[in-house]
Amino acid sequence: MDRAPLRLHGHAVSNYFNIAHAALVEKGAAFELVATRASQGEAFLALSPMGKIPVLETPEGWIAETVAILEYLEDTLAPPLHPQDAFLRARARQLINVAQVYLEVPARALYGGVFMGGRNSDAVVAAVRAGLDRGTEALRRLVAPRPYLFGERCGPADLFVFHGLGLVERLNRHVYDRSLAAEVPGLADWAARMAERDSSRAVRAAFEPAFAAYLADKQAAYPFERIDGSPWSCAA
Image (tube, rainbow, N blue to C red):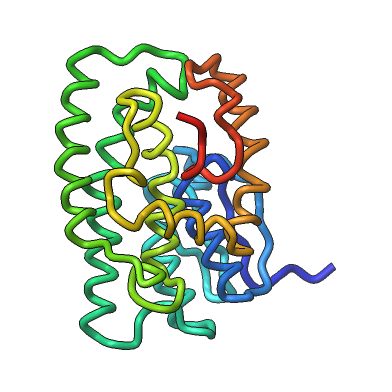
């Protein structure tokens, strides 16, 4: 059987893999998903220099890093997802950077005690909260859905915030009893709209069983009953 022209390698628990998966669905691309774990083995490092997922296999070669994958898809496949206006495109990329650097990355310090069977120290919990406070305030200043983050169409920023911050929302609810969706005006309605998209349904169908298996394997503190649909609509 002929292989699809694009093959996305990764694991459905990864929010970055899910962003790229959603983008492929939004583009209507012909693609395959290939279950692959991150690795520091030499063979995998030749494809992904940091040994991370996702990695996109293309007819021209391999691309790692989610932002680069999204840019490749935008440059090679219709329909366009980025805003056509240069200023709005820059603002969308700005929002992607804020979501990744100031919310998603700092929140990872909590993974061990929530998703991996460890324990987070009080100092780590306090430090992460301070970082999330700043990131949430930046998100509040940048986001005004109408109905999507940059107009009438779902774009890369929507995919990055929805899927990229899904685990941040879960951590927020579990550790701090707070919610991005509740604290950023308009975000709850936007998240509900995003959850109904075909791309979100496809990602969720792969994510939920993979996440449940991951939590069970790690004997995680995070309870299974919170896997109840979109990451943005989990029970508090």
